[in-house]
Image (cartoon, rainbow, N blue to C red; front, side, top):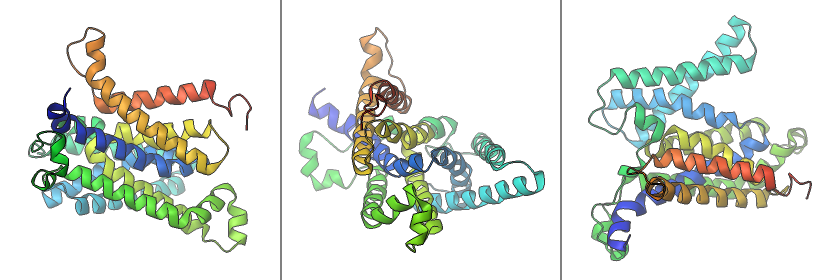
Length: 304
């Protein structure tokens, strides 16, 4: 594929997939180390009904509406978990499972019953995202990268996920030390006067921002996979936090690039005639990387 084809048809979807993968993998490292990896899964389930309701109320898919809808859904889910746990007298894990399943099912039903034909928002989009359709029609080739007329017509999803990723990087740089200390030893962090509860809440909020920003473009499958697979694979490569984060970024980028390429060309290599879902293939590649790290990683072999 030459530049005249690659830049308008594949460059922006590939960039969005890479940015979304890294944005989810970065906070995912701390969720994995805190044994809270399923929070990423939970967030991706909870935000769906919030986003759908926000669209039905506002009539448009906008960043503000999506964030407000996701926040409202998160608050409702917390209230539901506490209510089920307290009045149903069941343990927290079961209450969380019931709530997240019910919230996601409610979101799917709302999508099925509502008129979302005017936007890219339906059940398939919620699961697999909108990645392949995020093309850059105003581009004519590599020269478009320095053409302001073409650049201003880049898809909104690219700017949205790039902005969220930049925010995540800034927050990690600012709060790296307290976040690292509280992640490995909350008791010691508390003795140093660090606001442990606030740090934990902030991590969840940042994770939710990444999930909401990525959800519209790449769907829940990539969001779930990237919160868990690259950080978990990176954890098997090293026992140092900084190195782990670096490995997770590498694994996220490799998953996004290889998954996107395999989705488009893999079926052709094996005699098929149609491409497959880029989101599904990216998630699959991330799972294969985790499997290889589990089999071959240094920490798996006992090295430090």
